Image 1 (cartoon, one colour):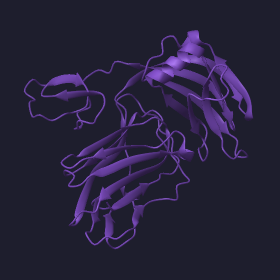
Image 2 (image 1 turned 180 degrees about the horizontal axis):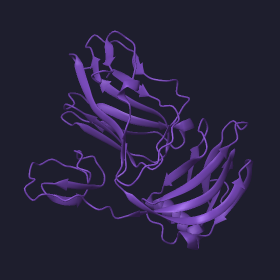
Image 3 (image 1 turned 90 degrees about the vertical axis):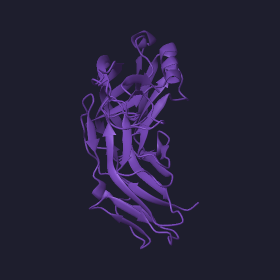
Image 4 (image 1 turned 180 degrees about the vertical axis):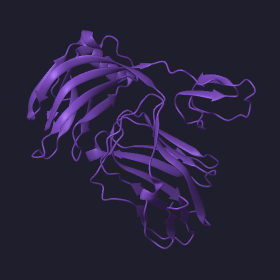
Amino acid sequence: MKKISILFVAAVMSVAAMAGSTKSLDLSQFGGWDANAVYDAASATLTIKSAWAGGQIWYGDGEYALDATGYDELVLELKQAATGTIKLAVDYSNCTPDAQETYIEVGQTIGTIALNGTAIQKISISADRGDKDNVIVFKELRLQSAQEYTEINLWKGEMVAGNWENYIEIEADKLAQMSAGDKIAINVTAIDATQDWPGVYIYPKGNWDDPIVNQSVKDQTAPLVVEFTFSADQVATAKANGIMVRGCGFTMTSVDLKKATPTALVPVSAALNDGVRRDVLGNVVDASYKGVVILNGKKMLQ
């Protein structure tokens, strides 16, 4: 199956997301070439012609990152239902953490990726060519957060990581409140440009070989907050051992636990009975969406 890709790479920017906030990404940043795969920025329309025989639509050179600090999801929404499978993918700076992807299937209008990193290097969209022209009209590409967090300081001071020379430890008892979906947030105040691969790593205390999470800060601009969302398995490891924060080429001044708190759900009218799934912000979602959804006036977790 032949594919056409749109690559989106954004220059470094700082954002401070509040609970329930969204940030639309500029669709005009998409550009392209190849006469048989055309993207019109004014109408946000991608036309993949049936005669297409290869090529890409892309933006940037992959060296910069989009700061998604404070946001939990990347969402691609279409103005009209997909007529072929569309793939939405995220690559993080210097490939840490691993890339993520989701699919918008035929008849669907939205795709969502639950982000596990904050330094995004590239967002790509791939679509089928089909037996006839495949016209895809984008409605919005956005970062969003529907979650509120309560910050608990775990450590404060100053640590210059150097070239893996220094680290700080946080005892397991300080992580007793931690649950799946919570975040560890590290305030990075400086990045050492002389280091080839500056990055922030969290290890189980006493384990120098197997990081729980890690993220590159290459090509980032300090100050910035590096956030890691912990899965259930990662929380269990952290709570059993405590953690070490270490790495290369950065200076940090605080480590905070961001506890996910119950989100206040929007009121739902009992008359809403249209069979459409919506998230707590009222955005239309599909069956692949993970989280609290509202369907026919009822709230449920899927």
